[in-house]
Image (tube, rainbow, N blue to C red; front, side, top):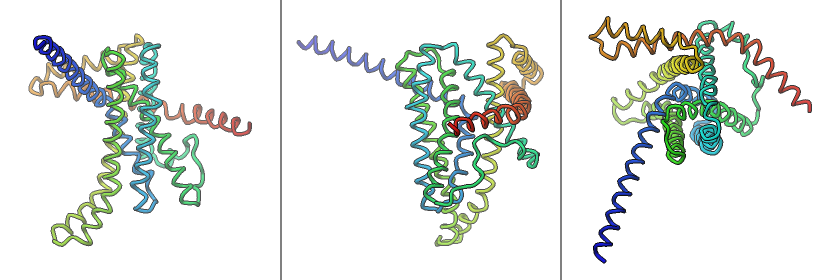
Length: 327
């Protein structure tokens, strides 16, 4: 009896070790997959604070919370099942979908850069679905702003989940689902936790500047107020650069998968040459060359896409929307 019990305990212990190893593997793979989506993640954090601009301070966190809830629904209830279905039934389509997402990142990043350099010319390329005027009713405006943020999040979340799916190894179905769920939840908590801190930083700084008991506290509050516009600008710049870099790398890899490996091979050759020429840099030199090469390629692709999307795709979308509106 005791021998049987000890054997059962040994079996349970072995199973627990296997389960723990599986959980560690899933968590590790989820972390790696989440890092691959850095460009879209940073852009998501940079874009979202704009959606609470103009609202009362007591509405900022509730708005962020509702957008975060919508983001979780996007990732777990829509995009996760869709990603798993693609992986199971049509794994061949993941690379084309990922390449399209890479083109989107290149376009978005290049468009932001173009708007910063040529603001007047950029206004000629209008986004599809823009409304000329905002609703006067604050509740309606808040609902519309949240809906718009969730729609934007859906696009970025789709890219994040696709990148994560492509970055995962050939895990089992359950492990893949668990890793994607961890990526979705982890990124949502990271992004919207950061957004909550960003949108309330001004209020916190103002509180310190007015009410802190010490001169150091009041000075810290003033420093926060002065720094926040710069922090937002830096976040926007980093997000744009990350989008172009990640998008360029995805498109290059997609082209190589379709048999057009020359651009990616050229960058790899240049990175290898840097490693031989500057051995003191170690692995940093080739990595920097790869990042710069992917970024330059992504920027070139994005700049080409700006007139194509602005003059062909968006007008087509507007015509389709008008036809559906009439029916």
